[in-house]
Image (cartoon, rainbow, N blue to C red; front, side, top):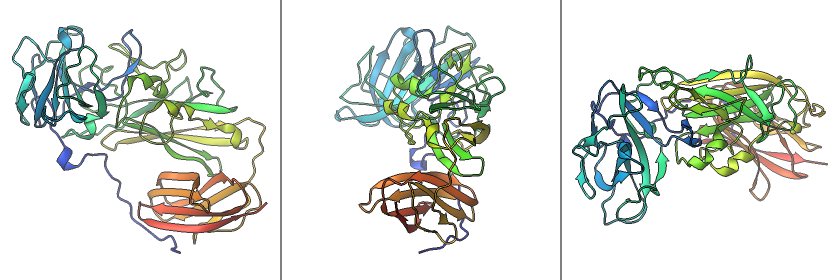
Amino acid sequence: MRTLGVFAFLAAALVASPALATNWPLVPLDSVHPLGNNWGNYQDYGGGPYFHNGIDCITPDVHGRRVTAVRHGWVKAWGTIAESLHYRIAVCDTNSSFTGRAEGWLYAHIDAARWHRSLGDEVQEGDSIGYLVQWPMDATFDHCHFARISDTGATWMRFPNPTWWFIQNPLTIIRPNTDLLAPVIENARTNQKFAFCRDNSNTYLRYDSLVGDVDIIAKVYDKTGATTGNETWDKLAPYEVDYSIKRHDGLVVVPWTIGVQFSNTLDGALVNVVYKADNTCRSQGDYENREYYFIVTNTDGDSVIEASDVNGKWATGTVGDTTYWVYVRASDVSGNTTLDSMMVRTHNNVAVEEPPFAVLSQPFHATQTVGRGGLVGFGLAGTGTVRLQVYDPAGRVVAKLADGRLGPGEHRFSFAVPAPGIYIAKLTLNGKDTYSTKLVALR
């Protein structure tokens, strides 16, 4: 068995590999353009809420700017989903002889009255494919709605109802991206950093008497530093929001868990899984207002947004009645991060009990337990990525205790022992160094 020594950790930037990087779709191609909306923004212009499924590259005070292909491909779609403002070109990575699911790029708001590429055309990276139509809602800008998509068939001409999947946040691929501004975590309620309500309801709870299954709501926005000239439009959704909960004495009751990550496929029907939009925490996304309230507990801990994420919650009835620190962390694709916290108290008439066994930090090992409660602990000499899980003798995971970055010092995690027997606690550091120990649970 290894002992835990000093180790180094290099933070990985949220960037695509050089082979996948693309330029911007508007000239100048090697310059950062301001964004009026980004991947995952809450949107509602009166017809119902939805995710904004692209990035809107804005051209303030410049009309009719040339749009450029970011990669070699073939035009598989040219048409409009609504009216003359919404003409779009879809350039697939593969040619028309391939009819299976393929990936490509969407360039929307192309001027149909000016020269543009047509269905079936082959384009090279850097080729002109059209020009932006003037946006009549505000005479100060035009914009290109730019997205990574996929579809099937020799052509993707299914207007006005395309079957495209919106599959990847372009900001994870596009270069350069010189964002230096960290997201902002605002008060979710008056004089209150976060808001708390009963799971999947609009019944809000006092932060000093949380009861039962609870949703945690954080109000967050991001900026890129490249301004549109409009303070409201500059407010974008962050790339990722995650959370953690610790008891006042440092016991981790919820390890760092992804609340939402806007990296992969967006399904507009799931917007209410991510965003709270009621009279207390009212998400808004239109020309006049941008307010983003994230239900950070609506998650199963991965980066995929799915309907079952609404099952996520903080089950306060499983922890003792005492004070806890709720931490929320917001990040952008460039790795800029903001962390904020709030002290809360649970009130379920549940006594605080220390679990009867502990894993000691040096070395990583355990004593036996005589009850259902377990406490796993270890010490770190430096910051690193940690995965800590408990397995039964058949190799099944019975508890996922940590999966993310932890700093130096002592860390403790509680879990419920399913039944008497022998268990294995496995600790993995930085994805490579593994430590394990046997736990014996008695009744």
